[in-house]
Image (cartoon, one colour):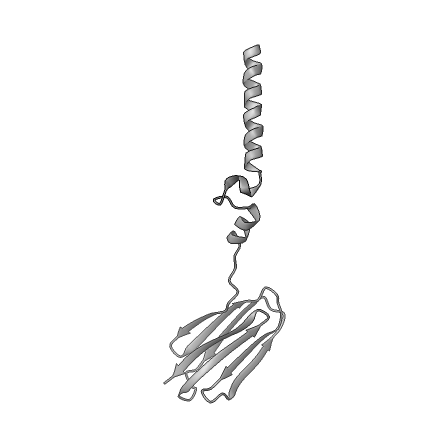
Length: 126
């Protein structure tokens, strides 16, 4: 009976000490340890930059707009003249295709402005 009680006591001590070590402060692990919140931040890192895909003389745009704020889409020619202008508000996912197949021979710059920054992509029409 005493040996069973000893084994249970030792097992309880090991369980409690391992739980205390696992939930202890970060500095107990030295520089190799990482706080739980830092791990979670690395796991859910989301890039919010737009994705531009060129297919021939078409430019496809995809943007994840988590803030659902206003997004401005503008297209300029090589002389800085505004060719296209659109304002999109309240959409979480913005998908847009720009077709330059019938455009004049020139270099066009697509500008995307959202709450987090300004992004540009250039396409040359030959």
